[in-house]
Every structure is written in structure tokens, then in C-alpha cells.
Image (cartoon, rainbow over all chains, first blue to last red; front, top):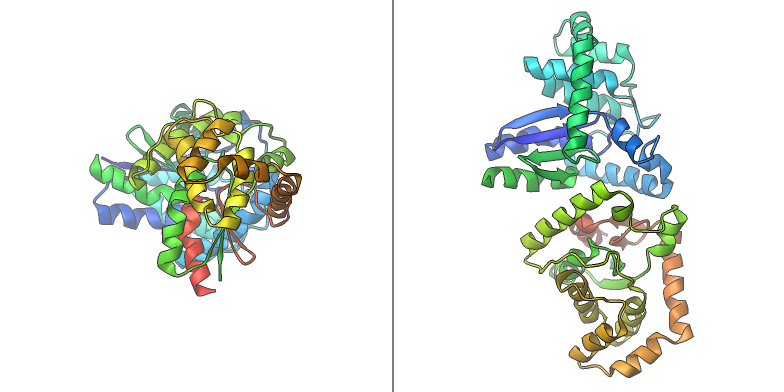
Length: 196
Length: 196
């Protein structure tokens, strides 16, 4: 049974999950599917027009401290973004192209590192271009395909699928219909996939 | 360094934490302090007059499934309460008396088991009396002391302390000023306490 990894580039806890998921899945012999989506429409449906970590600042303050501890334990660079949340729309569109062509996982890790390890603005096309170039890709060509209407529609469809399947936050994992929410549930999801 | 375990009887994820915390702390050689408090005033300050799991039903639906999986993995009985959340005010007041007298931890586990393992109404004085009797206690005497004004004020003060120290949910753990939120963070909090 395969493991689906659903992630949003603005999501803090998706960062350690994105950096860990491939090795854990590989070690367990579980096939992995990377599925970028957008939390904006999902949060909007709950009446939130901002990250809940901004709407509830006491929870937000805790989250930044928790992230710092988690990243230290995982050996990941961590600097809180200057502006939070970052807009991951462009990066998510590019990721769909990358997933088709086998460089999606590397791009995803590069985007998360830029966002949460290097305080870069991942909504900035120039930042995304430099990440694509660092992966040896033709950035102009990739961007043109990422911004094509059909690809934009794909991301929208993917987000609608997330809503239909009960996703309410990121990261989320699916093993068949079974949903697991949060970086903390990655190990449990992998055990589930192995047993299924 | 001691580990403070802050819990609310209505809180689902406090149940597995309450059932695990004593053994984990003991095995690690960490002193444990049981601190009941009320989430109501904290949620109220965030504009919630109900559990967020009821306010956001998609998240609530996931939580019940997640709890069932967690309890199965921990070998704990689990039945969702007929009414959720339960009112844990009376049980919390009793717990303060129990913590003074050395039977607080046993009472806490009995209340959580009644709430989430046996679908009992833990706001019902008769239910609490039967739990006290099962621990060999003089229930009438305990209730009188639990309901004394000074003890009611103690619980209020404890909840105010939680707010002051940044608690926004349950279970929460403190090691000195360091806050850890959620059953998932229990192991990390214990490691922190051992290192401190």
C-alpha cells in the first residue's frame, strides 16, 4: 500500500515531514506519493483568513518554539520566516510538474529549506527560478508549464480532493482512506502502510 | 528537574497521556507533578464556547478516529463519550484533594477511564462517589472538602497560572519554563527533564 504525503508550503510542520518522509518510506519499503495542495481554501471554509497560528497568538508562540526544538532534534536549519505564512501557490504549481518528471521531491525539499531554513520569500519567482536552476533545470520552460491553465486547474482539483477526503491541515498522510494528520503521525502512517 | 503534567478531564488526548505519564516519568527517574486545570476559561478567551473539535467538525471527526487508533496501540479501552465534552469541574476539585493525600494519580486514571473507556458521566456526583469508594476513600468527606470555597479557589488559581504560563490546550507539560503541548510531546518532555 502506498503512502500519500499531502503538504502545503506555508505549513511549518510540513517542513520536518518533507525532510524525513522519503527516507522513512524507503526504509519501510513503502511507495511514496507527493501531493502538494493549498490550505487557504480549507482554512477559509473554517472562517479563517490567516494562519491559525496568527489568529491564536499564544498557540503561535508555542509553535515557533516547538518548531525550533523539532528542527534541532532533526538536525535541520531553522529560522522563522520574516513574514508568515508565505504564499506557496507558485511553488505548488511547479511541484506538480516536478512530480511528473522525477525532480518533485528534490524541489519540495529545496522550497521548504528556503522558507524555513533560509528566510527566503518562496512566493518570489526569482527565488523559485534559482531553486530550479540549482536542480539543473530549464527554469523558464518549467515556469511556463507550471503557469499554464491546465496545470493551475490541476492544483485546484488536488485541493478539492483534499477537502473531499477530510483533510483539514498539513502535513497530512493517507494510506488508502486512512488519514493521519501532522508530522507526529508520519511513523504511524508508515506502519499502517506496511501492514495494509 | 520535575515534570509538570497539566490536564483537563474533558480533554481526549489527556486520557492516553494520563495513563502513560507515571510509568514513563518513573522509568526516567523524573519527579512528576499532577496539575488539573480547566480549559473552559482558556477556550473562552479565544472566542470558543465549545470544544474546537465540535466547532470544527472535520477536525473532530478525525480526532475520534485518531483517538481510537492511539488507544488501541496503547491497549486502552476506548468508547467516545455519549456527550462531549464532559464537565470535569467536580473531578478536578477532588483531584486537588487527592494530590495532597497521595491518591490523586489513581483517581485521575479512574476518572479518565470512566470518561473515555466506559461512557460514564463524570460530571455526575454519583459516578465520582463510586470512583472514590473504589479507591477505599470516605467519599462524603472528600466531597465536602473538594467543594469547600478554599478548594474551589485553588482550582481557579491553578487555571489562572496555566493561562499566565502560556497553556492553550491539554495535555500540557512543563519542565521549568519549557512548555510541551500534547500527548505526542510526552516523551520529548521527559528527555528534557532528564537533561535539565
